[in-house]
Image (cartoon, rainbow, N blue to C red; front, side):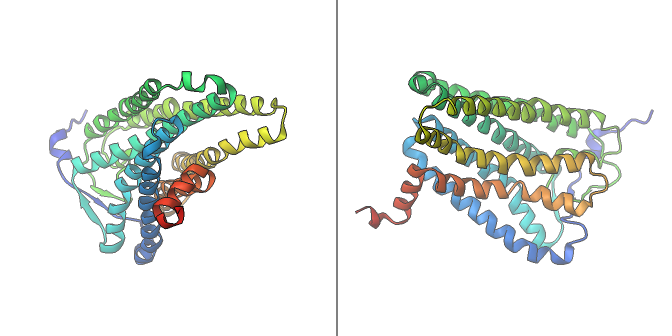
Amino acid sequence: MTTFNLTGYNTGAFTLLGIPGLEQHQVWISIPFCLIYFVAIVGNSILLMATEHSLHAPMFFFLSMLAITDLILSTTCVPKTLSIFWFGPQRISFPGCLTQLFFLHFSFVLDSSILMAMAFDRYVAICSPLRYNTILTPRTIVKIAVGISFRSFCVIFPCVFIVNRLPFCRTHNVPHTYCEHIGVARLACADISINIWYGFCVLLMAVISDVILIAVSYTLILCAVFRLPSQDARQKALGTCGSHVCVILMFYIPAFFSILAHRFGHNVPQTFHIVFANLYVIIPPALNPIVYGVKTKKIRDKVIFLLFPMRSY
């Protein structure tokens, strides 16, 4: 059996090629990407400012976590992507590639965990409103935040090691705009079965389990809502969940489409894979603060006060 000197093969830099087949159009593609990234940065920053005085409330605490995680998710990938669009293929060191890989997947899994925590918050608020403040105490909220952050770290950190162990002796050219786990692993000149199975287990252990718990929460919420005697009460209860449901759909639908197309869509052009993979790391971070700003009156009023302070008088 052939053996490889891992340190010798891994030390070279990678080259991110961008979107193969669309090199001539990348400058034009960068315009909407840049605008959407700007919206994501400004929107999530405003959302953080709008919720900073309400962190004692569980929903606003989780909203702040979501905004921070969205900033990490988009900033991990988009600046490098824009530099590729503007200046052509970009080199990235192997440690830099591993760092980008880690923060990309960590922030994605943490986003999913935060959405699960927010679903639990809505479940308690609607199904046990009288016990809301006793169940979701500040201490409990901090425990949930630490727990989901630690879980996301523990699930993703091994990816760094199982990629680092691979020998890259054929090519260091990555046909993508950023480093992601399976895309980088496929460049190795060794068996990547462990990487494939671990990636599948991460999807199953983290994301799928979050989706199942969110679905259970909203099933119980709907059962409780339709037992309410008043039509107004039902509408108010459903209204409090509307923004969260929109964010869930915006996050999971493109993410699962990209994952499934990547795993099973062998006839799907690589260009489509890469474009869609870029969209799901930038569209949800840009739309989340807009959805919550429109749907949540307290946030909407705070944003108006921040942008137009004279109107408060």
